[in-house]
Length: 284
Image 1 (cartoon, helix red, strand yellow):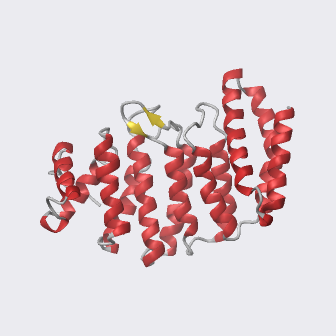
Image 2: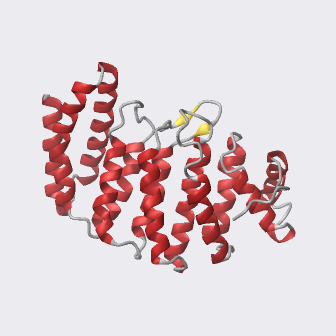
């Protein structure tokens, strides 16, 4: 998908999307291809109203609510997202390009949801999507939640949303579940930024989806058993501040996991494993 050089500027795009959103104009009255390409150009705008409400909100309406975009266009948008946007600025430390990456994640989630309904992506495309999403999750170091003056970055939460749509897809080989849950687990082991914006709960969503769809409980129990040892090893490598952040993130995740498995008979073994892991971490 090549972006036209004469695309709309942010202020122009905002005016058009605001008019459409308010009912003063309709999509049928506009050059949809031109607008959608402009939306892709500005998907990570620092104007939170344009980025969150108008661009993402419009994609949500067009893809999920109205389902008016051609499957070929959605496929092109997915390819462009994975190849050109998802890793944009990935090596930069806390740059504004994080908004491009994270809102691209949300667009990918919308496209995957539509594919689950309409079945237009190939199995190879779904597998490639899995590889790219996990590579991104591993490479992303900017895990800020809310950025003052600029709004929500929330890379971990947005990626968890995309992965949840991925694992719901019947074309994804369930043998990939172990690889995916391990990647999500590693995302929890964050030592530089305390997750205070419900990242733990968002990460749990795709994990529970996989559990409902065939992920063996024992695979997570194994991770729980290994976690105290992992934390002890990290403690020797980190200063006090970073070790405390790591412990905070792990405890918050485990506590949320504990609550969500409480009182559910099919998760008794998992619930007990979470409790044992928490007890061991607290003792050490």
